[in-house]
Length: 286
Image 1 (cartoon, rainbow, N blue to C red):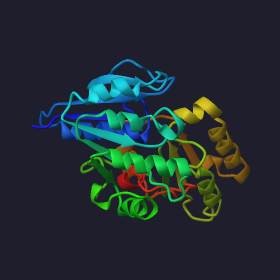
Image 2 (image 1 turned 180 degrees about the vertical axis):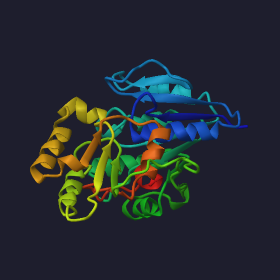
Image 3 (image 1 turned 180 degrees about the horizontal axis):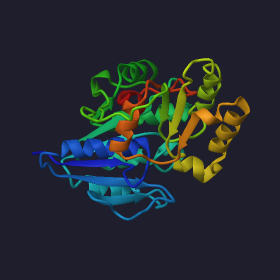
Image 4 (image 1 turned 45 degrees about the horizontal axis):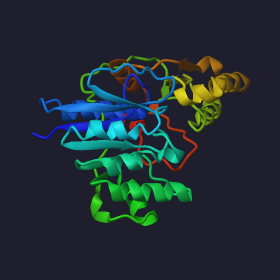
């Protein structure tokens, strides 16, 4: 029975990548398979090891990729989550020497494949694919974009669709008015301002809809910008006259609470600014 080492952000860090990796690790080890997490932690993160964490790679540690690679080499297979912003170095380049240091087979899961990468981003991703034993994208769009826009071996790339939490039997909160919902970590680019503007056009409906924006502000946004984006949304809602119809839930919901919230929605709104996104946990859950 193979054992798996997972490299990623991981709870108690709160981000989509951490949630994805936690769920993947839980499923792959549910039958007793040995597994362990090599957690990538940014400044401000709680560095205490949680359940299943065998090593923490602090992004503040110089050449921390060396010890992280050693920890992964204790397993039969290394599963590496890739996103440009989570590893140290320019565009997260420190993941590359880690991959080259691995002595066990590696599977790299790509969460972002840019249509218009910078020259550095393009070169880095091509080198990551070369160094990996296998590469996974979660949509055909991401695979197609990778094969067309980057110099990679097609045989290395496999599509495995993004999973979703089982929601059968989860009760929905009953509501008397149509319910619109956006959830996930908040920050510029989320596009919630477009939803607020659209909400003003629905005020002639009877009954008028309500709109829930659920989720904390992304930790990296808080670090650099504080709560400026969230405050701007509150101001915009007031200026548009729809503040009374918007419920901002500044919390990171557990799976059960989130499941009830999703099932209460008549419409899930994903008003993101970027067209670069190729994978969305929110879309899959919806």
